[in-house]
Image (tube, rainbow, N blue to C red):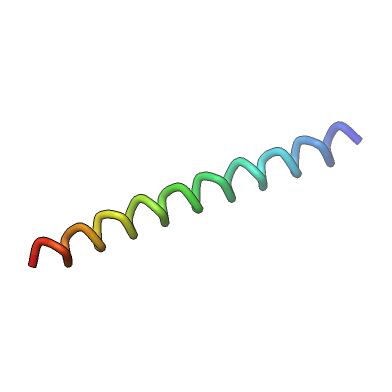
Length: 36
């Protein structure tokens, strides 16, 4: 049970990091296009 909780927690953490990085990159790209 502990191993399952650890795996789920790790997957959620990685997923949140990927979503955050994708949003950050999207914001930079949108801002860069706006300056042009």
